[in-house]
Length: 129
Image (cartoon, rainbow, N blue to C red; front, side, top):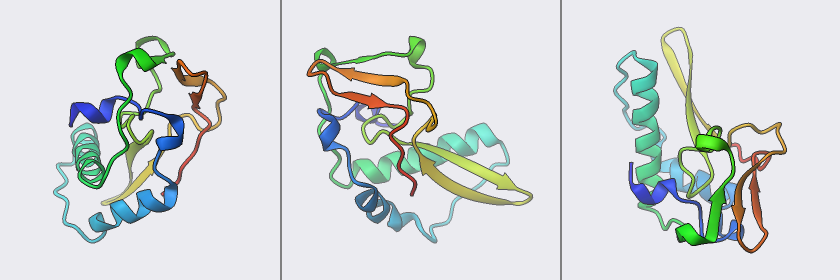
């Protein structure tokens, strides 16, 4: 996955709207995806596919390392695709997979990213796509 996806946007207001995220990811609908049957591998492959798709479609500008701080120790609970503040999951039921993209820990009010300008990305910021 592109290293730029692992850094937050320059500002909280630069996050892509849920409608725009849906539009950017709509190119994945109906696209073939090879499943290995290994949930960790499949999850990683989906995350790379989603990350690449978002990165190729006008992503927000990254914050510089001096502009923010990741609050949770060892970045626990922080989304993998931090640039858009989303994470990916594959939910399985039997032989079928269902891709869902959303922010982690949606019921928690904990701070994930603290910007130096006092803005925060909270775990309760929730985007369903």
